[in-house]
View 1 (tube, rainbow, N blue to C red):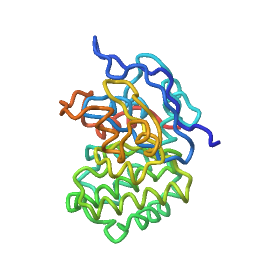
View 2: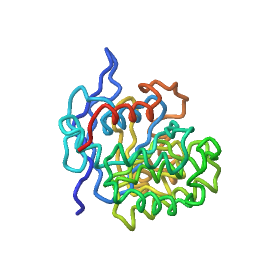
View 3: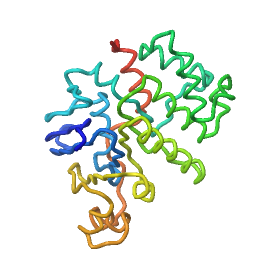
View 4: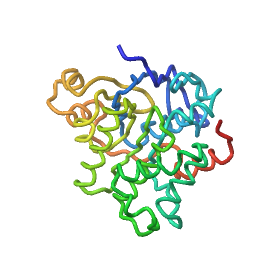
Length: 269
């Protein structure tokens, strides 16, 4: 059995009297594609912020690639890449310059930067646009660049927070093709959130559903359908979380900006 590369044990995050995350435990295996699903305000974003060192848990334990997220932040950060729901590219820089800035922040050896940047921009079919300003890019091109940037320091884990939000169907499919390829060829662990349940059903090997700050269940699509007596992931999800709409109550926005500030304020070794 594959070793766990992400582990959460009894994790709580409290804001005043509100428990945004209420004692959750789960694990993700090395090389696994893992979906983290839940309604607005369920605790998804708070959990990702804790996993990616932007928030400290109130209690409990989080580990990434063997590193305690609260005690070994620098090492934990080097183990993952992330594509945020909110845009995090610098629009006044070119594609190449955005990649180069990320390489400097993560202390990618100078002798390796050019080749890594070229290889990744070719992977996402953006090498021909390397000198173009980001403000000229479409939404799909920006997402592809964000994925390339998140891979630049060769992370063991890639976090994707609503990575296809607002993208057309063709671009969504292309993006997931890249993600599958990364998992299969590099053994990379993928942890993603999405509101497109067809994506989770098609891509994820296992799924955790969170609601009201608690993990309701974890399993494959087939296991969730069997558990709920349904035939599709969407039907199972609705049966587990209900069909009423939710207000967005999870903590904070501007994840990309917050994370870039955290990187600049912490020397990565």
